[in-house]
Length: 121
Ligand SMILES: [Zn+2]
Image 1: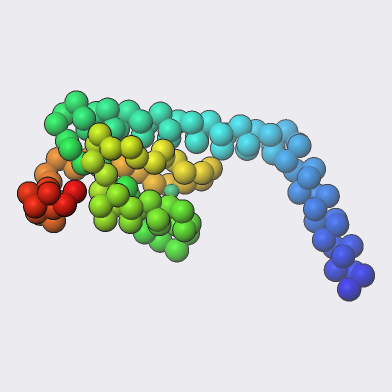
Image 2 (image 1 turned 90 degrees about the vertical axis):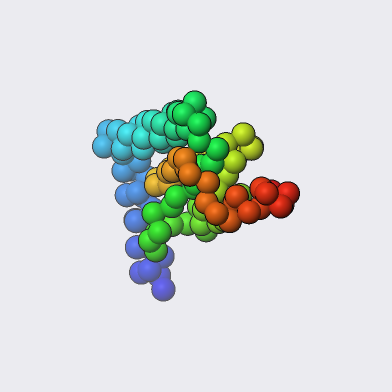
């Protein structure tokens, strides 16, 4: 037990050293710049869709085991993952390391067309 506690302390200390080292700071800056670059790209994607006549965007997660619950929720949100382009919609990326992307939908899926025609949107 004593040994494990010591191991944990040493591990914590070395992690602390890493994130304040040149390599750690560079990695954090890289991570943040990637986050902001994705934010700009995803905002631009919405504008591109709107200016080209698209009415829907679809939240696409990577569909693998690493997708977090929050991203899964957004990918199933809106109308089964589709968001009308003029609705309030969640910002992407959701978090550092988020790999989700907006897909521009030019052709309205049949279930959305039916919902719209029956006034259920
Ligand atoms: Zn995500």
